[in-house]
Length: 89
Image 1: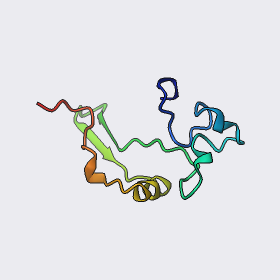
Image 2 (image 1 turned 135 degrees about the vertical axis):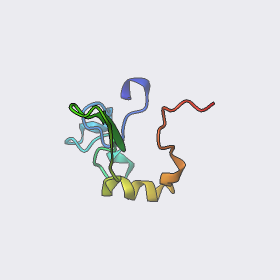
Image 3 (image 1 turned 45 degrees about the horizontal axis):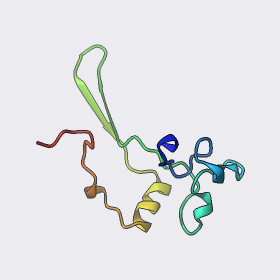
Image 4 (image 1 turned 135 degrees about the horizontal axis):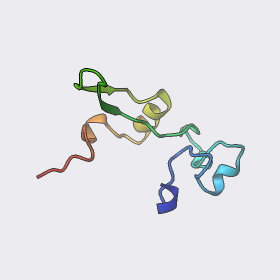
């Protein structure tokens, strides 16, 4: 993401010049109530069971630090499609 100019908030490795602050990550200098933790989350994961071959889907809530950031930015979970890569026709 940093390569295309959109580093992930809290990315201490690839987050740009602000990541030089002892690994606090990109966005650490943004201040305020933004968490310095990495803002990267796998909302859901669908895999095929190795024996039954049935699809299994696991969904996880946002970590607390990300939920606080979403609240700060007035983002709602309903604003995001369940599958952001689904082709809408």
